[in-house]
Length: 281
Image: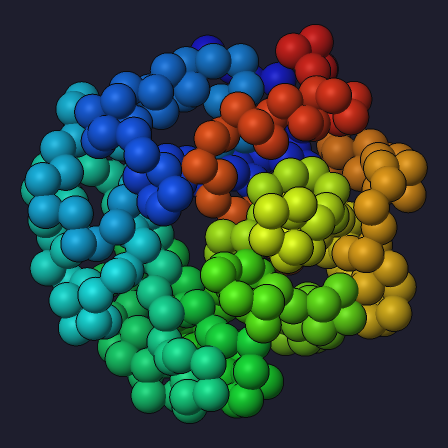
């Protein structure tokens, strides 16, 4: 079935229903993903995310586009990918953390580069901590891409502690650093809604996916950190909706996308904001 999702939003959402805090079974999750693939909004979807430690994953029917979220040592990735392929899954990408906060990311990057060397059909995303060694790690990723590796960075923008939520200025600096190195990037859990908002239960302020999208557009247009941070800090749709609407027929720059536990949530918000509709042409 043809989709009616504008190019700006194409493939922006990975189905993260098997990842915390998701509570759905594998069978129910894969069935729901297949149903999404047949819906008019199918173009919004990218891959179905599967943790590498999931031992009983069964791909039925085969051909499910899978993204592997590594939750084991990097050395176990080849076996996990082989297991998923044997199940009938079409493994498209791998995401793996290369260091904890405060650790040197270079050794983990070297391990992930070796993995990418032996499996050149995959897009490999290195989750790099937003801490010491970040810029050098981005330089290493850029060098790997120049050598022909399909390696790109991923950043965590949320979690169970306040320090895991970067400020608008911090995230803007990262986006601009990726722009300057011609690096596409992904974002890890922490994004829940279209707009920046504060969770009333935890007090944590979450980045919005529309904020990140418009910030990436601004960075791609050559704007500096202050302008990009302003878009990330917006809590009202007015400064965000029109820039997105104006570019919705163009491919999305820089930002590859993020994982959503419920893929209908971002769709519902995009419809509410008037950015996606079943009548789009």
